[in-house]
Image (cartoon, helix red, strand yellow):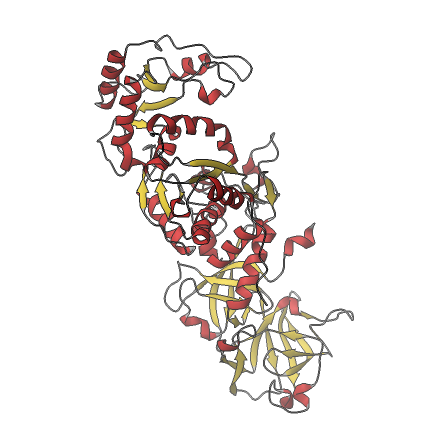
Length: 558
């Protein structure tokens, strides 16, 4: 049966219309243009999937371009992290580009604009410029320096470039229209003086282009056909087109900017500034802390590239912003991990179970399926002995009929093993249960083919052999914020909504096969959730991060 085709989204409709009217298919070219001033987050993942996905759909090249025009905030660390994230998601770029590659060309074009009367050097302070720009309902006023001669502008601009002008001394502004209803067209700043070392160009430049000047021109230089960005750049489109018109010639392919809405994710923030504050204030340990919505944080937590791509595809692109429940992202993780993650047994909150009629010193190795969803996954052997660990919550001394786990006088099955019956408990001086004693049916071994092995009981428990279990650190991660929209209350700081229970570190016990697990290996701890081996693990001592629970535990809280 042929796969059902989904309807085109509005971005694809734009491209299809352009292919009918203005563009040849071989002219299609896209780009993903992050600024290297932080780590990419789940919102960027949607943009990555959009642009690289269009490249795959139309068999068109996609550039990875770093918009590195602000040396104050940008670092090589962020460049490297961004490249790793894009590759991890499964995409390859045609060319690795940098806005800084074009600094000389941008400068040369700016000189031409001065010569043509389209730009001038302004010596006002930034506060004065802001004041004379007016308001959305009031026109701006022309700068007193707007009528400087071409010669004076060229001389001042060269001095700015050579570092002879102090920082904040002058700016270069485009000469457009101070009465434009679009305030971005009221003589926008093109260059500012910054005597800062750049992560690539070092100290070669003392002036740096503004984003609006560099972005569209970089698209034009790279022959990008369609420049897709988020909705806040819609007012910038007029300026984008104006700048491109100034440097292009008739008949040349000009990039086309179009905008799509952000998809906000519940129970988190995706502002780079706020994410940086979480790191700097020690709320989280790093940019790749598994509680962070960064791609590197999600990767470390155990999310798969396929899960994130599925998430991005399922929420699509739209023209209006909306809030996506993080439960949907978690669902995508569960759906993918269910197909791929091996099943293992681990106990997070142990109590000892003693099978009194099982021979002391005896042990057996029982066969267990690695993944019932994947026939090719095979099986493994797990050790079984007289003393086991089970979860404390899986036992009650007395329980009602709706409790289908272990209780005194009732039977349950141990996963892949035997049927047992609760007999008695051992308690300490404070009344806490330290051991549960039970008996087992030797003929009820799973998969043995006996009539007793096929006997049905209502409960099945996971367990680990106490003698063979691997003691390990387990990090239980949860949502970083306790409310859906931490930015939603304008009277409170988003930090007030940090979830104090977003991380619980415990000691648990897992089956011995996990001793050889490597970093980023993923597992389903049966009846508990999905876990991933953390990068801080040592050989033979894995640390496990909880990716997601088996079911949405937050749904019950609502």
